[in-house]
Image (cartoon, rainbow, N blue to C red; front, side, top):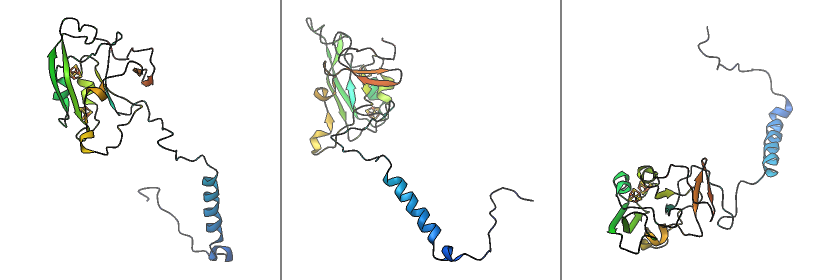
Length: 187
Ligand code: SF4
Ligand code: SF4
């Protein structure tokens, strides 16, 4: 009785002359090489050519603005609490009169920093944010660091540029300057 069907019958038949000279194996190997030679090359000319990373890739953080261009972050600190790497720090400030067009909430992050050396790109900050303020872009990687002081990303590198809006729609993320809506419900 067989317990599995993985048993292999070994043939004891005498090898032919061609088999003794490894000809079928050599021809088979050459065929595989030729097949790969004519295949589309998986390598790309990075960084001139960028690869599509997929809709669920977690890359460069972005601090979102709302439809009117105001910063969404209210410096509640939930992202920092959720961050397992303790990579996020911030300093809250109160919105002054006349700053309504800059910050959506009465409290905002005067300083917001992410230590990219600590970050493990888990996305928990994005999950924790009640204001849809922080996202990990699927279409942009964090560049390689050359200097130690490049690893702390401040608001200058995190806050979304008005001409480079980030959108996530139907599990597909697109960059467009015109459509600031997001899939997650607006708060
Ligand atoms: S992606 Fe994860 S590790 Fe990086 S800042 Fe957000 S919560 Fe922290
Ligand atoms: S990004 Fe979101 S969770 Fe983090 S401080 Fe701002 S509003 Fe709060």
